[in-house]
Image (cartoon, rainbow, N blue to C red):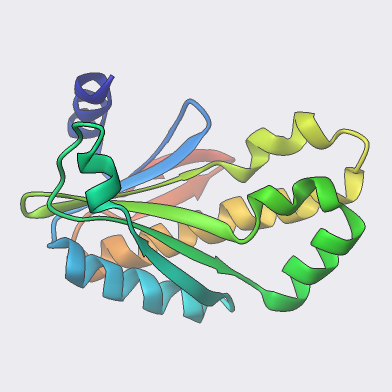
Length: 164
């Protein structure tokens, strides 16, 4: 599985939509990429609530990475409102981006929030936040790509294109 994911990412530039995931690879060390990611998250009006180190836990399963972090973030009022109105959605909040270092590059990935629509069909009011979150994440990833000097992802007629 890891080799398939790596091949997919090597063949693409910019941000990728694949199997319900939003992913991007940037040509910079993870520590610097995380700083740019944190700034981009905050510039989009979100609050970073926690950064979890996962290196040692993953090493116990035989997975080795230079750096593996999960950034938890959200808009406080929105998280509280959604948690109150839809307690079944609480496990998905706050939003999370996984960051993995791979030598001089950094991979950032997140579950595409729009994939949750089918699970919350009885809550049509959740469709708008799912799509807003997706667009915000794509914009956040584009900001990090731009900071790294790489190709910037752009939405073109609903399809994701990498500007070259």
